[in-house]
Length: 255
DNA sequence: ATTATTTGACCGCC
DNA sequence: GGCGGTCAAATAAT
Figure 1 (cartoon, rainbow, N blue to C red):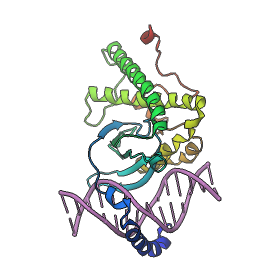
Figure 2 (cartoon, rainbow, N blue to C red):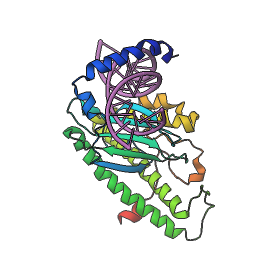
Figure 3 (cartoon, protein in one colour):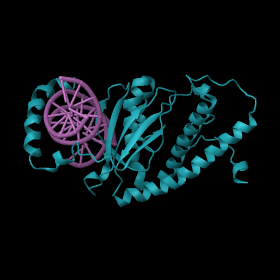
Figure 4 (cartoon, rainbow, N blue to C red):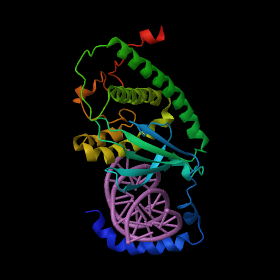
């Protein structure tokens, strides 16, 4: 429906346009020049939670990868000439799917960086909390208290790590939610998460993508689209909801 | 009306 | 020639 019309007209049109415009412009030189310095790869369940604002500029199916790769650029690419970019691809089809995020170049936009450093600080705290939480759970459960869901080729350590990451990302979500209430200037950041969820989740679990419209309109509520209430097997004891949240008792941690 | 996303085509490297 | 990365018109969302 979408392409039929534009295929014939824009196809040749674009070609001429691009050749015209790129003649001596910046478009060509930063295409493919991609200095690989400043590249960093991350694996995360919440690829959009890095505190920066991204704008999607492309999506591509990569050979050998079952999932498409989404390309993002800093929202301030034009405004501040920020050269930061990243691409996100789903790494597996686990229950909360794991994503691989490759960052290229650092942000030069100061405004976003400020909020991001804020974000990093809290994320590190959360990481510690989740880590300690899992460690505690591990020691308390020397004999398996409940049947562990067998994961594909997963050792117990791997399962623990997965669970830990899930907790971290979910905590980030909640914290971000409350941050949004306090600082309203980051409220629109959620759009990219919604889009990514739409793109990537649509492939593994269409039922989830069905609700993405609501999610995108209320950006601060549910950036992480966890597949559903049926994730009993995962052992997550909390929901990603800003007002319904009782994940871990932190009393033992704070002491 | 403005802004963000989608998507087919183009470009350069390997 | 294949592939990954990018562009930009069309489209959707706000």
